[in-house]
Image (cartoon, rainbow, N blue to C red; front, side, top):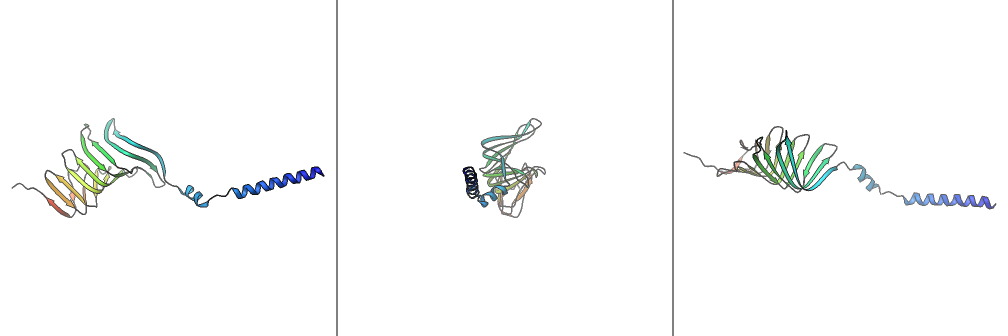
Length: 188
C-alpha cells in the first residue's frame, strides 16, 4: 500500500501545481490587444542626423533634423521629422536653390509628397521668402502649395493671403489666392 499512496500523492501534487499555474498565468486582455493591434512600426530612428538625397552622384537636397523616424504602416511608408527640419535643395550644378525650415515635417514615400508645418519658412536663391503654417511639396509635379495664411516677400514687395498659394517648387511663379494685404512697387 505504500507504493499506491506515493503514486496518489504524486498525482495530487501534479494536479495542484497545474491549478496554481493555470490561475497564475493570467493575461491582461487589454495589454494583449494593444500589442496585437500595433500597426505602426519604427523601422529606424535617429537623433541629430544629416540625410543626403542624391541622384546620379549629384546632391539633390540635404536635410538636418534633431529627430527622425522611418515608419511603416499598413497604409504605406513615410519619414517623419517630429522636431523639425532644415532642408537645402540644390540644382544640377550644385548651387543652392532653396532653404526650407519647419518645426514638423513628413515625407510620404509612395506619393512623393512632403508636408511641412508649424512656422514654415522657404527662402530661394534670389532671396524671395515665403512664410506659412502649412505647406505641401509635390516632388513629382514640382509644385508647392498651401491653403493656409501665407506671406511672400520679394524685392521689397509683400503679398499676404489667408487662403494660401500655389507655385512651382523654385518659387518663381507663385499664385496667391484671395490676396488680403500687400505692398507692390510699380515703376511708372
